[in-house]
Length: 505
Image (cartoon, rainbow, N blue to C red; front, side):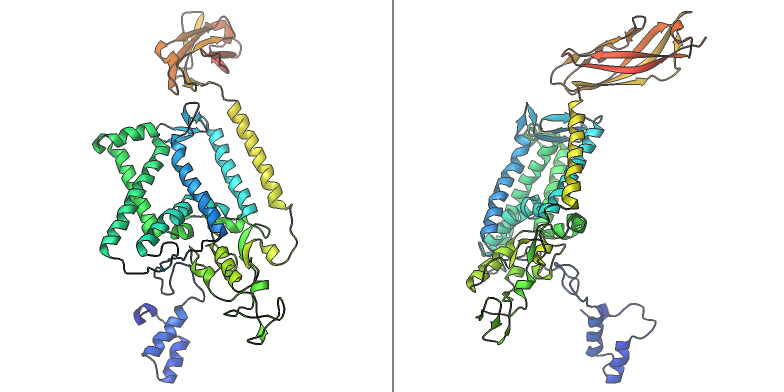
């Protein structure tokens, strides 16, 4: 850090360090600069990807191919296939997941939801949120380290590509050789192709595979908006996987910052055991008992040999020995690295392991606690409400809206007419024609636009109607309750309770 960067812009009173420097005869020299730097330097790191002077700390984690890494690799490859396959899978002829924002239609597990399904969508989102909170309370940040697309693609697709071009395949760490411009261009080309493929896959979730295939085979001029979305998505992915990388987890994603709310002392985390590991002494040692004295140095020594392998393999650059940290994504790389070292020095594995804060502190395990009782109860309630909301949906939606203008009109001396608009949504997979009737034979249903009675699959229309009835029906209170029955060709039926208005006596 330079002297100019270290000194404040406005200094109304000299600092104590400056007075001390004056007494030592070093004011204005390098001593004052060093003192100012010491004042401004943080006591501890602010973020694992920042240097002390605030510049970016680029991480090139080494690779520890232990048992946990092998398990994560299998799951990661399966998830890559699943992420790509989901837009192509069908249930009952409908996509497994299709989020058509432009058409305001969401298809989930083969069932289509419309803007009128606000309650269903709200309960669905709430169920996802409560599920994440429950899983986090039990297993910690298992999602981040094992299933998050950012981690899956970064650690098992793009970092291996980096290591291939760096000459560190299977090892990781700093490049084994200088990277020529040709290799850099080749790496960028591979990144570009992969990001374009992932961008197309991402787009398929929102437009469907059929429309996407049609766009791919045609000129971008025919669909400029979709092409721009694809290009922007590709650019964002390139920015993420080439530059932003682990900072997405540390800075942009709020999940890590919420963990203090979602975790408790019994939640599973990746943890270092200080009771067993401290005090740290470098190098292999021989003990006179399992936890005794280092015979070489003549003092107590823990199992940690302070090799820093748990640090150099961490994809977020933290030291797991500092305790539970926001940056830890539970990727288990430190577990594999430490187990390998423990095996070499002849000590039991598990100095770093999946555990809990209470277990590390040698406190008893609690199977039942507030979070594991309340969250499942809430989740069952939300799922029950969601199931009821979905099961109550019929083959169509029907909602009555009163027409504009006067509340009623007179058709001669003894007849009254009310205008309404009937909003119909066809939820079936076939064309439907809708029939209307009332529970009162004296009320006539007049269809203004007969074409609006016919709806194609997933179509929504506004059907204008008039209800004509004798004026004597409303002579008491000026209104009368009736029931309008709407029925489609498949036998689905909706009964709408409503009021008609007319003159009073």
